[in-house]
Amino acid sequence: MQLYRLTAHELHDLLIKKEISAEELNIAVFDRIENVEDKIGAYITRTKESALESARAVDRQIRDGEAITPLSGIPLAIKDNMCTDGLRTTASSKILSNFIPPYSATVVKKLEAAGATVVGKTNLDEFAMGSSTENSAFFTTRNPWDTERVPGGSSGGSAAAVCAGEAVCALGSDTGGSIRQPASFCGVVGMKPTYGSVSRYGLIAFASSLDQIGPFARDVTDCALMLEAISGHDPKDSTSANYKVPDYAASLINDVRGLKIGVPEEYMAEGILPEVRIAVKKAMLLLESLGAVVEYTTLPHTEYALPTYYIIAPAEASSNLARYDGVRYGFRAAEAVDVIDMFMKSRSQGFGPEVKRRIMLGTYTLSAGYYDAYYLKALKVRTLIKQDFDRAFEKYDVLLSPTSPSPAFRFGEKVDDPLQMYLSDICTISVNLAGIPGISLPCGFVDGMPVGLQLMGKHFDEGTLLRVAYTFEQNTDYHKEFPKL
Amino acid sequence: MITVKDVDHVALLGRLELTAEEKEMFTRQLNDILEHFRSLERLNTENVQPTAHVLPLQNVYREDLVGQHMPREDALSNCPDREENYFKVPKIV
Image (cartoon, rainbow over the protein chains, first blue to last red):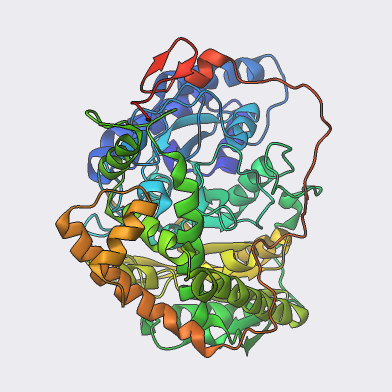
């Protein structure tokens, strides 16, 4: 039995039946990491000793007959833009390459409190800015289905780790698709929850009105378990919503009868690879055959989402990244003549090209004379995009689309053309602008590469998304495929 | 059209020191990207309220109580240079 291929809920059953120990499980995952990490490059930092120590604590609990949680002893990976107390956290940037946080992100604390073991910190596009993980300042992560291709991004390390059996589940962050797009490229499940439903305390900020932490998993059940463990109000995050976290496991119902599913025609138009469209159409037919009402609908402002996003996100980023000045933490350049020179040199040597590009873009659109034309305009169009969704959700329970216009692309294919790279987020960014939840799950393969199906839901209605996703998964086998490495 | 001079000005505002190649590249790329943004001009947004943030949350306050704070040594633990309990920086004036 290859333990690293099982899901958290399967492993939990084995743990409570005492058929395996948590230590055994964690050793199996670290052995897997030893065997494949040279090919994949998912991790920046690995934490074998502390993981095995936590696993042994779980084993003692089981031995003593104490109750354990569904995530106790389960090996998890954390994207390296979430702070971990005493453990280096880099955001894949030279400017934070030696940063050791003095506190942990709320999500990390919650998972540790649930007994999960953290196996390591995963690679990302620097400061989560990118769609391929090629923008990491350290190294490139490879797609386990074809190591000549990108894993997607920005949470490429987390997606690849879960896909390759180097972690059972993982955390990512999603500002414009950074969980869903890599989940789709790697053939795993990834969810961006409703804005405000998961605390962002301890997440290294990119664009604060769009950023949201969420789970990666090998199936929808694990996704629900992870979501439940990390959700909830946090007084340390002033944008955290005060709401009662539902029992997401109760949403795992294999039945979509009577549910109304809308398919925005703008998401199935030109620009989407025909093979991807075919895979999504098959998913529509399947859900219809299972009793859902599936209809085409429209989100008329979709074409404006990309420019709107690429004004708002860099504007917020340019402001958030002002804190990297070489004073309190992070890289400081040597030989500065005065303090301004120190800021300029530290930032110029510490940030990579994409981060600089976004600081430039954001600073420009916020600067005197351009604020109204770009930033304020984008905030207004954001309202129109949100209203499109409000109207669609008056009629439909869930919206359905591809997650990305194509499967994983090859290294270097888009990295020199920022606009082409930005277009790979075309199906995911509106969800962040509207603050609604979205999930990606595997719905087929094109030339051996996974295709992702995206479901979008109403604010705080993750339950219905999970129900539709679970039903689709229970009636298909795509999630059972495993890459040969 | 953005010129190299505009790029210089924005770089200074963003506290970035760019090389000649970077200036040339950003001038070209920012023009391409801003050109793409022009599609927004087609929309009439005169009577549309801006959305800065999607949740109906405003003015989140808490009770003004003394809480746990990060110990001073922890707060200073990552700084590149310090003197006693201060962050130390190069000469300002």
